[in-house]
Image (tube, rainbow, N blue to C red; front, side, top):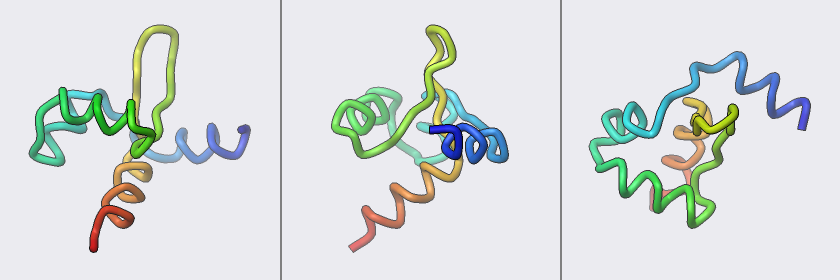
Length: 64
């Protein structure tokens, strides 16, 4: 867990809206990806954040 936190700190953390904008999808779709466990998140109190690396990891695995 500590390694994941350190990794996230070295990468910019994005909001759901920022993630949606970067991927060209709706925030609702981002929330579905999170609910399905396809995109990992970090919770900071009530805020949900997604690291750029986790987005890249998702895109790499989604590519077929």
